[in-house]
Length: 102
Image 1 (cartoon, helix red, strand yellow):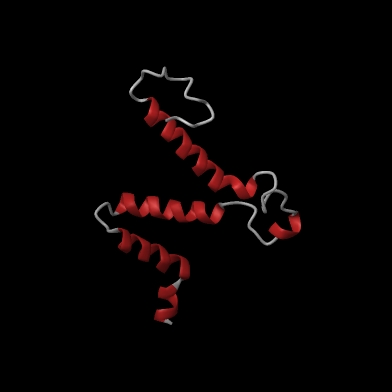
Image 2: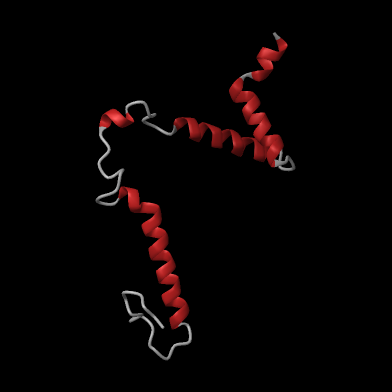
């Protein structure tokens, strides 16, 4: 029944979990290949030059800032719902309140 490349040499043939383990290995292999295929040799993103990425931010400071806000709000207001915290972050980042009050 096992058709994975390793031939399940890790588990002996009489082990009842051998087939499950082989299925797991096959699923992991196909998932890995699907997720990383564009980045592997021959993929469309294998060799991306600097001109393609020049408009992208060079750091992740913006997302780190957002997660710091999220962490602070969740510590400050532990009973707040996800929607409430999200709206508070959006309100602060978009400076919506200043526009409404002016």
